[in-house]
Amino acid sequence: MGDVIKVGMADLNVVTPPNTIRTSGLGSCVGVVIYDDINLVAGMAHVMLPNSTLSRQEMTNVAKFADTAIPALLVELEKLGAKKYSLKAKIAGGAQMFSFTTGSSDFMKIGPRNVEAVKETLRDLRIPLLSEDVGGKSGRTIEFNPRSKCLHIRTVNQGTKEI
Amino acid sequence: MGDFIQSLKPYHLDVLKEIGNIGAGHAATALSQLLNKTIDMSVPAVRIASFHDLPEQVGGAETKVAAIFLRIDGEAPGSMFFISTIENAEKLTRHLTNNDTFQLEVPPFGEMGVSAFLEAGNILAGSYLSSLADFTGLTLHPSVPGFSVDMAGAIVSYGLIPLSQAGDYAIVVDTHITELNEEKNPISGQFFLLPDPDSFAKIFEALGVSVNG
Image 1 (cartoon, each protein chain N blue to C red):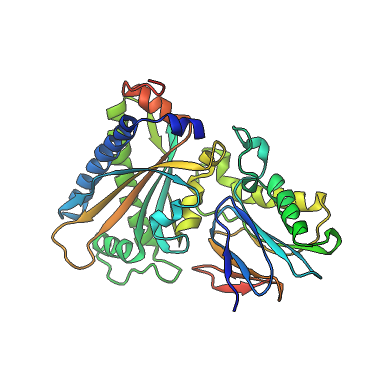
Image 2: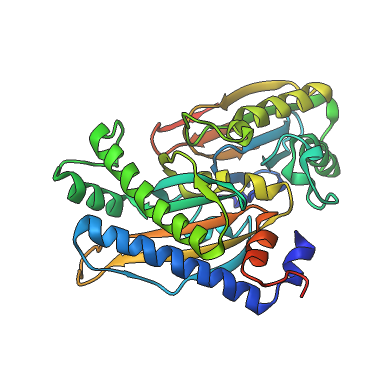
C-alpha cells in the first residue's frame, strides 16, 4: 500500500507508484491530472482561476492559475523523468456550486471558465485530454493512481465513478 | 494582499471582531424570534487563514454541510456563508415547516423545506448585514441567496474567488450561534464573512480606523 499525496487548493504536486495523489472538495476549481503513460509518473494541480492576468499582485503562486499551473506541473514531471511525448491528461471539477437567478458578477461562472482555460492550455501544449468529468453542480474529491491511470471521482450526491 | 495583512494591527482585528459581534448578535435575535427559542452566540473569531487551512475550519474539505451563500454588493463587497451540519439544517427546517420527514441526506430534497431553510438563511444573513450597514454607515445589499448541500471545501472555495485574485489568504470573521437549553443536538450554525480585498480599507475607514495608521 502506498501513501496518498495530498494536493491543497491552489497547489500542485507529483507522484510515482505505489503512491496515489488526491485533492479534496473541488467546487468551481478544476483538478488537472497529467501523467506519463509509459514512465508511470503523474502530477496533479488544483486550479482556482483561469488566467494569471486576473492576478492583482506579483505572481506568487503559479499553481493557482490554469495557464501557469500546467506548465509548472510539466517542469516537475520532467524532473521525475516524464517525457513530453507520452504525456496524457484527465480533468475533473469546474462545477457551478450555487445557481443564482440574478447574477451579480461574472465570477459566478468561474467553473466553466476554468474548464475552458485548462483545455486551452492543454491544447497549446499538445497534451491529449483523454477523459473529463466537468461541470454540474456537485463538489468532487478526486484521486489518481499513476499505475492503473484511473482517476477516481467521489461526490456527495452523485456517487462515485472512474474515468 | 500579503503586504496588507502584514500591516494589520491587533486593533484592526478587534474592529472586525466587533463587526462579527454586532452582525451575529442581530442574527441570533432574528433566529430566536423565528423559532421562539433562546439562541446564544459565540465570541466571534477573526482569523487570517491560508486557502489550504480554510476548509479545515468548517470541519474538513470533504465534510458534507448545508450552506447558504450570498454575495454582498455595495460599498464594501464580499461573500457571506451560513453553514450548518446536515443534522442541524434538518432540525431547523423541520421546526420551521412542522414536517418531520424533511431530510438532506439523499436528494431530491423537499422543495418546501429547502425554501424554508433558504428563507431562514436569508433572514439571518439579512439581519447580520443590515446591522453591519448601520454600524459602518456603508451601503450593503445582499444578493439573492444560493443553497447547496455539498463538500465544505467545494462550497467555501466559491467565496474565495474574488480574494484569490489578490492573494492566497482570507480574513474570516467567524461566529457560531447555538440554541440554548438543549443538551442534545442543539440548532446551531456558523457565519462566515469574507470581505473582498478592497473592502477592508473601506470598512476600517468607515469606522475611523486608518489602515496605515
